[in-house]
Each structure stands twice: as C-alpha cells, then as structure tokens.
Image: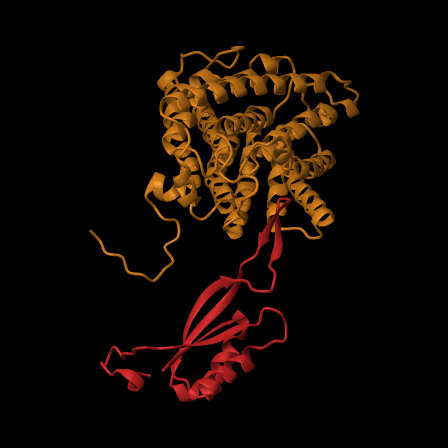
Length: 112
Length: 408
C-alpha cells in the first residue's frame, strides 16, 4: 500500500479530482496549506507599508492506493495539475505500514 | 427648542453613538485576528464607562456653566437642577455631548493596539475623559479659547487633535510592539474595516450636522460639507496610492474618507461647499503622507491615529483660518484669510490647537506614567506574541473550526 501526496495549485483541484476518479481512485483527503518552493511570493502594500507574502496558498492531497496503481495515479495527478507555470507543485510516494477501515475493521490491502 | 430641532439633535446623538462601534470595527479589522476582541472591547468599554461618569460629574465640569472660562463647576453633578421645564433642551445637550465624550477616548485605542493591559485602559479611558476631554471641551465651547474667537464646529480641536496628541504620547510611553517595524501584519479583515468606515461616515452626519444643535441651514451646509470632504479625501488618498504604489487599496480609500471627515469636523458649519472639497482633498493628501512619519520618527502608532486624527484635525482646524465665511451663515465670527479676515482667525486656531496639544499631552502622560508605576500598562511579550484576546479576555474572535468542544 502506498500513500501518494501532492501539493498543487488550489484552482487545479477539480481537474485533479476528475483525473483521479478516472484512474479508479475512490477516496481523497484534501488540506489547505501554505508554502513556497522556487515560486516567489508577492508584495502587498497597506498604507504604504509593504508586506512580503512569501507563503502562497496551495492544496495538499493524499490518496492511499495499491502498489500496482502508483504509476497511473502519479501520472493522473501530474498531468491534470500541470499548468507549465512555476508553482505547479510536487507529487511524492511513501509506503503505508498499516491500514484499517474503521467501519468494518478490514485491514491491509482490503482496506484501500 | 423647536420640536424639529429636538428631533434632529436626538437622531444626531444616536448617529454619534453608532460611530463608536463603527470605530471599533474600523480599527478591529485593521488589527490581527488574535487581537480583534481586545480592540472591540477597548471601544465598547468607553460606551460602558463614560456615560455614567459623564452624567455624574463629566457634564458639569465640561459644560455645566456655559459662560465659565476655565471650569464648568460642580453645580450640575448628578444632573442636579436639570429637568424638563425647558422641554428637554438642556438634557438633550447632556446627551448629545455625552456621545462625544464616549468616542473621544475611544479614538486613542487604535494607537495602543495589541499591547496595552486592558485593566490599565479601563482606568485610563474614563479618567482621560474627565481630565483631558472635559476641560478642553469647556475652553473651546464658551470658555476662554472660544471667547478669543477660535472656531471648532463639531470638535476638530476638542476631539481629534485632543485624542490625536494623546495617542502620540501614549505610544511613546507604552513603547513599540515587538518586532516593529520590521515585522508586521496586514489587516485581518478588510471587509470589517469597510463596514466600520461606512458606519463612521453615516454617523458623522450626526457628529457634524447635529452640532448645529438645530434643524436649520447651518446643519444642512454642515451635512453637505461632511458629504463632500469625505469623498474628496478618499479620492485624494487613492490618488496618492495610485501614484506611489501603482494601485490603490480599500484601506487607502477608507483611511482617506476618515481623514476627510476628521478635517471637516471643525469646519463643517463655517465653510461653504467648494472649500469643503479643498479641505477634504488637502487632508487626504497630507494624511496619506503623514502616516509614514511614524517610521521616520520611530513611534509605533499601530493604526495611524496620529497620522489621521492629529494631522487631519490640524489640517481642518487651520484651514478654517483660510475659509471661514460668516456672511454665508449669518454668523458673527471672524472671517478667514481668503474672505478678507486677515490672519487673526488663523492665529487663534493655532493658539487653540497648541493649548489642546499641551494640556492633553500632559494629562495623558501623567495618567499613563502613574498607571505604569502602579499596575503596569503593557502585556508581557508572550501575550503579545500569542494574542491578547485569549490572555486579557479569555475569548476567541473566530471559532470557525468544526472541532466540537466539550462543556464543563
């Protein structure tokens, strides 16, 4: 079982969700985050005082999938989240040690 | 008093009361979300503590004896001697001015944002009303400054310059916020700021036009001046921002509107419409630059009370010296420079404002230094960092999460 985490631009969430559903993913968790990478922030001026807004709003998504689906899910996310402009984000994959479906008590790959 | 006059002044008093919550939102939205409740409470505290003190002793010393030069006396304490035999005219005066007594100390709250101990503010605000607002009010209205010929229609000197200098002295004694000026935060809720601005402008029609104390032509012109000066000042501040920063902001427009309203306050019943536009425009431009002074001079006037109220009040008060037109109003006061009056009126305006600055500054310093030496006036660094609302009020401004909380 793998956890696929992605940081994407907030307005791409709908496209990514559609692509993930098409790839057979049933569940997604989404968090609103702030961050920066190579994309710089912007400046806002309030009464002549400039504020450096470095941390930009992003969306973090997490999906848990079978090992076999990693490549198609990563492709689905990358492809649908890409805008070719700086700040598109990143996708990474980590291993899940244990998984439980709370309602039924199923464990392991049955719980994906 | 004619019933139309009574009706108008009663409505005006209600409009002026509304300005204190309006001010609370105007400041509160500019502050951090973790300090918004403290800012609101400092303003609402004035609504709680001042009315009672005002009718017990404040009114008496500020206006009990209309002809007294220096001190209104104690004859009207507990509203002694005031009944409805004059149709309520005197009592109405107590009410109307009482609303001004409430908002004047409240103005100072914007400067001391995020770092003042609430217990110190709670004592400072009503005492300041008694010792700084009331005497200056007496001197300007029927007292020695007014008798000399200086003009202050609705409280440019008596309220805005008064509170403005108090704010400056207060921030010098209180000290800067941690990390200021390098660290800062933008307004947490511009929508709140704009709601506050709208309420202030609306209420200001009572503040200015109500100061005619009658539903007459002077009230109508004062209303017009309030309408025009605010608009001109908002445009002017926006223009300054557009030129300096490449774009203008809601905050700039809001600040400009308030600066214009402050500036027209002393002049509202003494100048005509075109000069009102000029006064507003002048305040908008001058205050847009004046708010930067704090960075050069090193004082942390958090929400620009000094830049808008002290400077705006001075701009308007001094410009009366240029534009006062008694013939238009059928008044017998001095004429402004551009109406053939020479420099006499301007000189009296300088003197009146100078006196207010010295007295208010001294009282503010005295009160705050005494509080500093006894109960302390500043919250700890930790509280300042983590948020003054939780520490001083045990309240949270925004409970937006979905997390369920247990009840004890």
